[in-house]
Image (tube, rainbow, N blue to C red; front, side, top):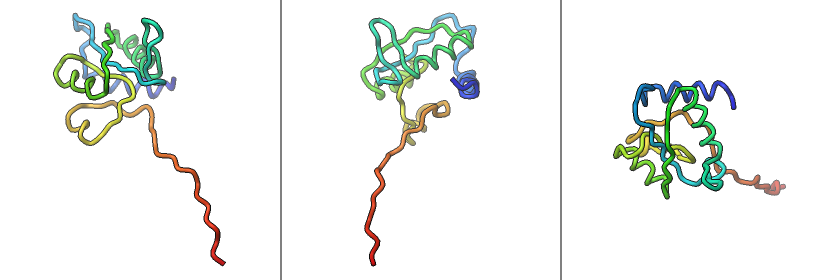
Length: 121
């Protein structure tokens, strides 16, 4: 994992939670491979591994709480039922008005195959 990305995430999360907090953080997660998925009782994936590194470096205790959809996860954060949501969460204008996001760690785009057209001659 790129150290700069991890440092950026740590800086973004610094203001989110005090390290001296007594209760463990509740981290909302949903299955969305390869970002987050369950293997038996354990959660794994790109976002889960990144969160584990952030939590370890910052000294956060946490518990993962599964949800069925991104909407449910974001609502839980808004309502104070979860402290953080991780996984494949796209940043939309509406979501950004309601919640704070870190910098994206993954950019997806629409890929179209090249179209060839005969040259008029």
